[in-house]
Image (cartoon, rainbow, N blue to C red):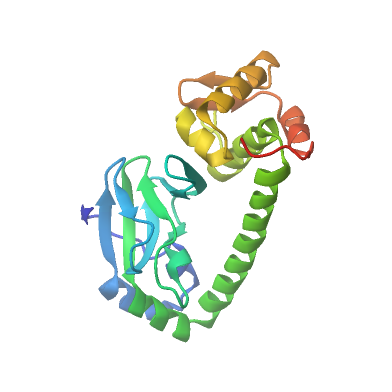
Length: 235
């Protein structure tokens, strides 16, 4: 990472949008603008908590070790999203790694100033509480899906959630380029299993794949796949 010359608009990220206007000059003084190249790590699982990052442009994948050879992608962070907050609490270490999947610009706030910001901005603190509640609900749902939903359903759910998060480009493709390994890691499947599932979805005319781009041809049918729970084990 290196310092960036971009000028933050103090209006895009979670922190700025919910802080009182009189607090924005303090944010301007304490923030650090950074640029990260594709493939570069922003924070590493197990490192001591240094602060919180806010995405100004680009995309990060948030992931953790699944076992000695695999990783599980927990989520993706785009413009306006917050990264590093999982390190908050009594055990101030990052439990995940964040890696840029495209060139990314970030705003960094050190942890002491972030904590001071929470104390003087009640609306921000309240929204943080709601944010954590939603994150917990989503995490529990994701763990249930990993344990009980067939891989085909998990792949369908992943594609639908990516469409909801990133929207579509002018050609109707999900507006993010992801390689098949990242899709596999996001669904908790092996690369080989994902390859077979994608071929099945292509054969059934539910999706179109063009390199790293995905188009949902039949979202209704894909949604039905996510509702077909079973006692299948994670592959």
